[in-house]
Image 1 (cartoon, helix red, strand yellow):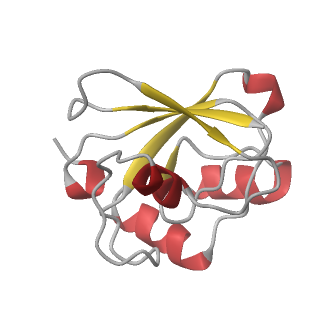
Image 2: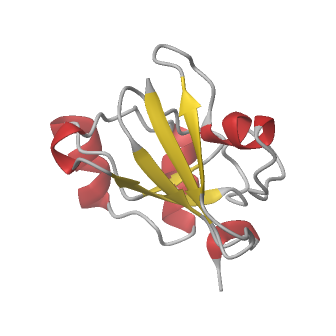
Amino acid sequence: MAIVTFSSPLMHKDKAVYAIAGDTKTALALAEENRIPIPFECRDGNCGSCLIEVSYDDPETKKAIMLTDKEKMTLKELGKITAEEIENAEVNDMPPRYRLACQFIARDENVTISFTGTPGGSD
């Protein structure tokens, strides 16, 4: 089981929720279930409105979840991922810091998901 903590200036305080190990719910679906206001438009990895920053409570246990081609393209367009980070994710199983909530699935790891509340994460 994973503990996913959501953090945003839109919320009065951080909120921690459980993600069941083996479940394939995205961070966006988990947020919606728990009334956490991550912005989104397409739910498909195309628009970038659900940009999140993922930090791992124990960086030694990071588990990479494959980036989809759509997610790679969208994150590149937003300037949130480099070619080196993509290679690190694909070759060395080191997940990038920025993801899309509609694509990210928390595995058996505790993470903090931060978001600004502004679509695309811009300030």
